[in-house]
Length: 407
Image (cartoon, one colour):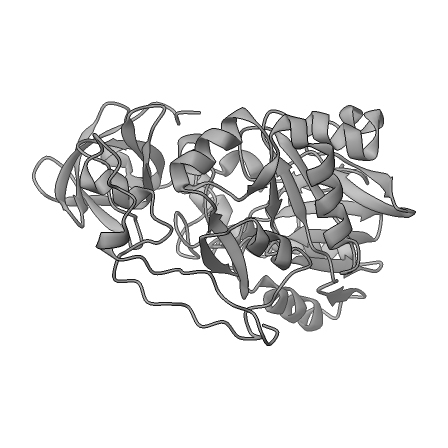
């Protein structure tokens, strides 16, 4: 961090709890705080937590909480978790998602290398398209779940979730003596999410941006520079992600979006922990780790293992496909008052008290009036309607497997 940077207050005591909102149970109030726990200490800024071209705009917008993601700060709360949630569903937000670092592959073996990393078949993928690509190791374990963007026949960006994938990629390329250059380019993604996102983008980039289809991208002029604009994002509310190369366009781009969206209700936002769980959007490190295969994560539809020749984890995943997973991600509704933040795995138990899984993410849903959760549940207990018990920090709670995610 640069000198003179002042962190927002990230630690709130119970006396400062705005919970005091009438009619809300205590846990509901804590759900609206910008931290996982009243005991959470301050986070010390340093240069190791890298700033972004949008950091000053995020701070000016009143960010109240961050998490650490790919050695950078990712905003998690602006006004409060629920207010941000409702605004995302009703209007449009600008998100600093520079934490989605890019691993660039460039050279004759770029596509071969990417195919070695993922069981998804990339042979027919054309430039201008994006693909969700589970990245696996030799055991079939998940290392990351990024989006790959094909810029040209021999150039790709891998837009990362939260893990140090760059070093794994470099090791594979070196070990196999591939003709490919690998680096982390200075790309700082900015997301525009919400039901009014398309209208806002059209005002800044022109009506042609409306023609960009889901998981496709185009190049659009901004101040004499071509910017990659993809219809994608980490919400189910619709939107786009913009990929500026270099630092200098960050602030002008943010300000242009702000100015163009005043009447649309645009404001700074961030991936929302409630909306994400409602929508079943997985978080690497929370809902899945390298101990889980794509099939356990419910990502089997993104695995073309028979055709993905060269994938490092192919043999292991073929065995999983043959035998089937013994556990899998499931939506779970948890009963009772709003749960506290889920900052560690919560054990899930069956009718006899036996452990049958874990909860990795959970939140109170204002729209669905229940605690929504993402669980990794054993096959003996994953059928919809199965009643479970979840060990939360507040004590055991009744729970039930759902047939689908809420949004």
